[in-house]
Every structure is written in structure tokens, then in C-alpha cells.
Figure 1 (cartoon, rainbow, N blue to C red):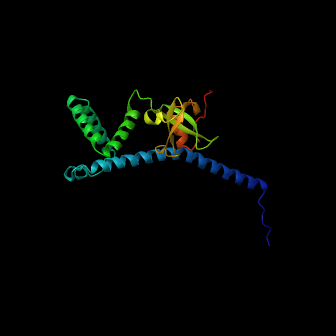
Figure 2: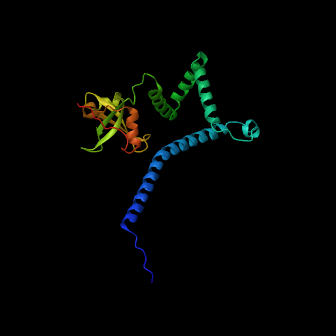
Figure 3: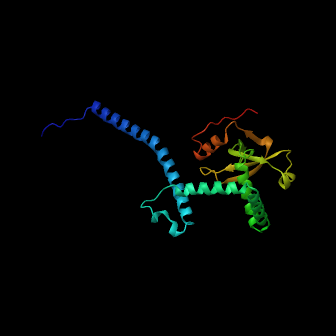
Length: 223
């Protein structure tokens, strides 16, 4: 039998080094492309959803597919923005304000509907008004038990019937989002003395929640 060559240690080291480099390049490429790809994919899903939603309200005889041999992506988004701008322009006029006020009164007097409408209206006013201070402060709350801290967002000072039934001099309404979906969560009423205020912006706080704590700076202000 012929003597078989035994691979040297140097060749094994070179192979391992090569595989390690390939692995490193693969993950580097993944880190670069994955966020970009996912971002464009989410944008595409939103655009497609808006296109389909707007298309449902357009009569078949006016569908662009009948006159153009290809589909125009983003048309629903553009039409949606144009419609919102038009509604906003009408609503700010004298006649528009009267119509909005009349519709607002009807919705506020309709049983069951008024509760949902009032809550949604308050949320949108809090988020979109220029002078609104809602969701402008990130805090730490000792929840759900002692020595366990949760990231929360101050939505305002607790008032009304809830405030009357609490002993503390000043209570804060705090929204505690779930991870990684910050649109769901819990509403807590906590004494201001038991809250640790952070120097983080709301955007930084949301990044911490969405990234499962991987992204973001945890800087607690000294009390």
C-alpha cells in the first residue's frame, strides 16, 4: 500500500482560519443587509396595504389597471396623503369646523361609541398636538415587584376620581409598553416619589423596548 499523506497542523490551522474568516464575513454581510432589507420589506407591506385599501373604494371603471398595463406602487399612499390634506384643509375652514363640531356632538352622544371615540380622540390629540407634553419623559418604575425595574413613559399627571382615591400628593400616569411591541402595554398610577426619571428621549426609550434592551443607553439621573 502506498503511504497516505497526513495533513499537517499548519494546513489544518489554515483551513480553520479560512472558515473563521468566511463565517465572520457572512455575519458582517448579514448585519449590513438585514436591517435594510427588513426596513424596505416593512415599507413595502405598508404601501401594499394602503394601495389595496384605497383600491377597494375606487369604482372598477376608474381602476388604473384598465388603462395602464402595469401597477403603480405607492398610489394608495399618495392618494391617502392627498385625501388627508384635503380633509384637513376643509376642516380648518368655517363650514368645515361646523361639520366637524356637529359630527363630534353626535359621536359624543351615541352610547358605547362615545367611550371609544373620546379615548381615541384624546390619544391622537396627545400625540399630534405641537404643545402636548405626553410621552415626553422616560422613567423607571419598580414593577411588577420590588427590586425589579421596568421602563415606562409618563403620559401625564393623574387627576380626577383616581387621584381622589390615592393618598400620595402627586401621582403620575405611566404607560409601560410590552417588548418588542410597544403599542401594547399597561397603565400604571405611581407616586412621583417612587419614579426614577431618565435623561433618555422617547425615541431612545422606544428603541430599548423594541430591541429587547440590546440598543440604547441606560443613564439614570441622580436624585
